[in-house]
Length: 129
Image 1 (cartoon, rainbow, N blue to C red):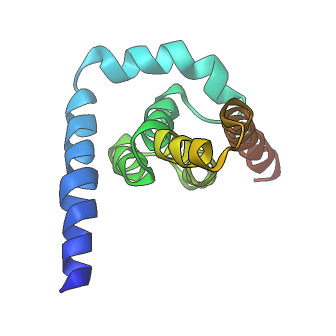
Image 2 (cartoon, helix red, strand yellow):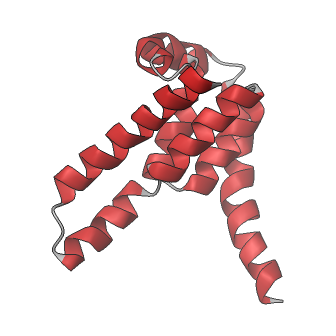
């Protein structure tokens, strides 16, 4: 019963709404505009500009929101591998930053390290795949 409740919380309340919103945004100029704006940055990791959306959602909301945004965008296996690796390094940044702050850790350097490391890992995976 507890497992079903957790599944409901994650899938129904986070992944499904994000999936629906991103699917609908695919029919508007929002995704293409975001893509054009962020393509130069995303290309460093071998990704199209559209990859910025799941990365930003994972970083600011949760990794589950990022996963919900990945599905309707139709990435290939290499791109999915890069995106998921980057998400696993730099996800839930506001929540984890608050936890870091409470422990007395230096927040800004940790944010910079996590985001930089995510891009570095993306670049490395792009080079070896």
